[in-house]
Length: 305
Image (cartoon, rainbow, N blue to C red):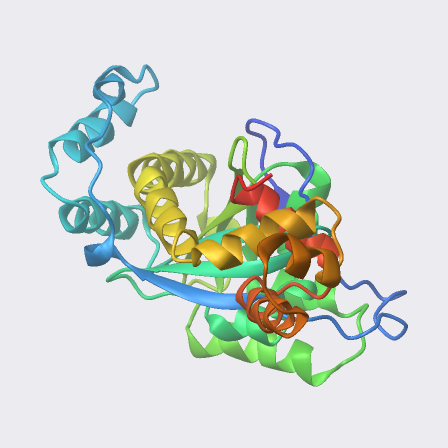
């Protein structure tokens, strides 16, 4: 491995990463303040259980079938996640983060964490304080379309080009505090949805050289198994959350997406502009939208247009 950069590891190349705008040395000072993503949490025990598809039992890759078979046999998501955690420790990792990212136009509007029994090294501050904007691991994945193997020293080396801001110090401090000094990170785009999933494993080892090709292969296999076993349940939970909008709010979003002004929406729905404004303010907060275009994007994601 090289000593100057984070290392993207060869696997299936992913498409470009929409909704991700990162700070660079050139843009750090000139970039206007950004609205940070809304933060949500999902508890594993609250997710709807979806039986694993039977085809997992016939995965051809060596080692995959045994993992898939155990996950198929799991009676609930809690048992599935306990199996994942056990396999994670066997490989050598101690931390697990699974975050669903919602793209709204050109930025990430919402980050939904899956809370499980394993320690998480990506926390609310990673998004609410803008740490993701300076994380070179995300830039490497966006540029290469491949998973990334990293360690804390190489993160520091890659961050030297940025000004020593409080954000940079807090980001590195959070990793040190979690004893997350090296790891593996993968992003998975969700088909037909403005969603990306960020899967990250971390370990206390300061040098990434412990992650041999064999360890990388096992980590990639486990990340894919985790995603397959939990993705449908997470999407169902997110869909139920989005469905909590009132009928009026859904109709207002649909009208806005069609290009209507507040006055036109009020006339169409036989209500007041004050009421339309009230609901739009709620919707902007709900979807972390800074303008009507981003709200229209949310309407499209909800299938309202």
